Image (cartoon, one colour):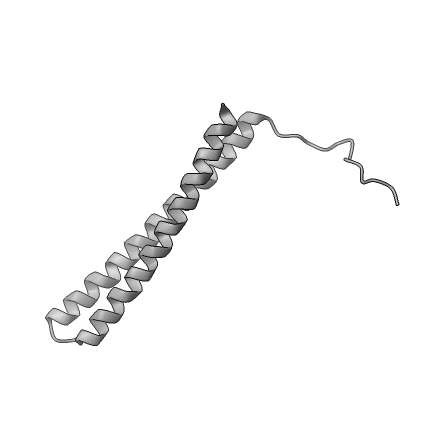
Length: 94
């Protein structure tokens, strides 16, 4: 069995391109997380409004709150990973 070979026309990206793509990826993920949070805010606002107008129960309000809490925990975890990714990108630059 022979060793694998890198094709002769293999494109090696420039350092600048790698950093640009990594930063763009981080920025897109941040925007996605912001959109998720905005959606959760809208859901909570709607549920609170319905509760005030007696259209939602305490149970529904607690359920919406718990769902928002879980989403927030997931976003925080993702933010930590993105912070690590950004730190690694900065280290790559140095």
